[in-house]
Length: 95
Image: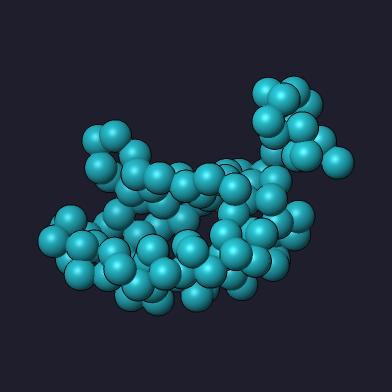
């Protein structure tokens, strides 16, 4: 499992020009089962994605499709972790 930490490197006005395409990308990844949660940071300096993709290489390929990445709007930091405890609703993560 990975935490994807996005940090914007351009003004929010530029980010907002691509937000619709970014949401479409996110929706596609949810439908494929690759993403579990996502959202904006507070303050709005980027976002976080929780991904259950098991391969860092595969996740990097997926991220290359993100309009924010394609248009060089954000930096991406990937942190791999192994959940050792979850709430009951997320027990499926423990496979």
